Length: 184
Image 1 (tube, rainbow, N blue to C red):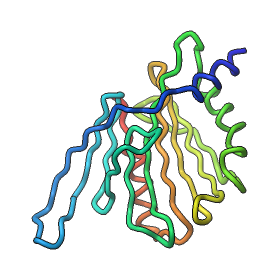
Image 2 (cartoon, rainbow, N blue to C red):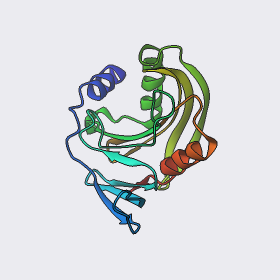
Image 3 (cartoon, rainbow, N blue to C red):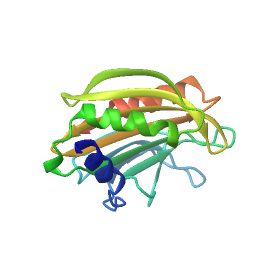
């Protein structure tokens, strides 16, 4: 019963409308170019995340609190998203519950899913799950690196999506973005 209610709570979560604010540190710009040194997105939903130069914030991405993209690689752009979902307190959901539910849903959501690894990590001292997996995305094979954790009945999920052929330095930048996730 608890799992069924948790499934309903996560699937029925309303679209996230609270936008994270971004603080930028611009470099001197010429008339034809403008470079952003770094962006720290601080959300009213209780987290911040730091994004290096070269990543562009996207606004109004359905179902996300914040999203950033890199330059196009093939037909896709590396993307980092953060999704925040409130879970009713009476469900008493644990990180293990969320992990199990997500693991069951993944094959239906990701065509040609191949799980590459799972680790237990920490985000701001809280236990978190780090997944790496591949599958078919819109426009080709992609790799996802995803970290999720719970704090105060709130599920935080930060995801890096990189298409096949993404240079190693861009993948490292994306991982550094995920590592910068800080809960408030």
